[in-house]
Image 1 (tube, rainbow, N blue to C red):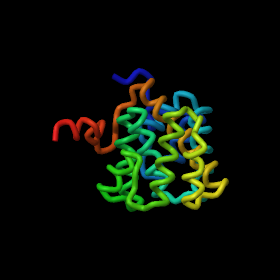
Image 2 (image 1 turned 60 degrees about the vertical axis):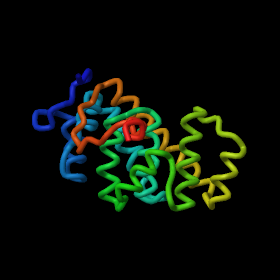
Image 3 (image 1 turned 180 degrees about the vertical axis):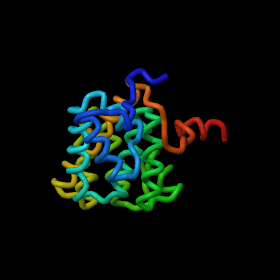
Amino acid sequence: MQRITAINHESAEGKAKELLDVVKEKIGFAPNLMKTLASSPAVLEAYLNFSGSLGTTLTAKLREQIALTTAEINGCHYCASAHSAIGKMVGLDEHSIEDARRASSHDKKADAALKFASALIVSRGKVSPADFQAVTAAGFTEMEITEIVANVALNIFTNYFNEVAGTVVDFPTIEFPLASRAASA
């Protein structure tokens, strides 16, 4: 049950309407996450600004893979479903999506980033020297590492928000978590 009300885009007013219009113009609709964040236009605006500023250094595929890793570790069905759908839109296949949910990739550089993201989440930011060395050895610059951390932080925010809000999944739902699939196979 949704605990924080998703603002109806059609009847929204003021800043909430303006921001939801921007989202709809950009991606074609206003997802429930955005409509729920609109309960505080300041939070929706902050999210959109933070998210928008992270779109230039890391590839869209890697950002989606990081989002999938984060969603799986944090147990956010909404984000895992949303980023599975968005991942397909940016060129990830089903196998790559499932791998990302397991913090792995067949691409060695992406794999290092996802392992680092996983370590970052599990250690709550206290990554080991070996974790840091592995991501730098894979070729990530300090700027890219900083943006991996930022992407993880942004996704932790949406994971936690969706869990608190009880945001209704409005993307094609996926089997969640992955561990249940392995246990039943």
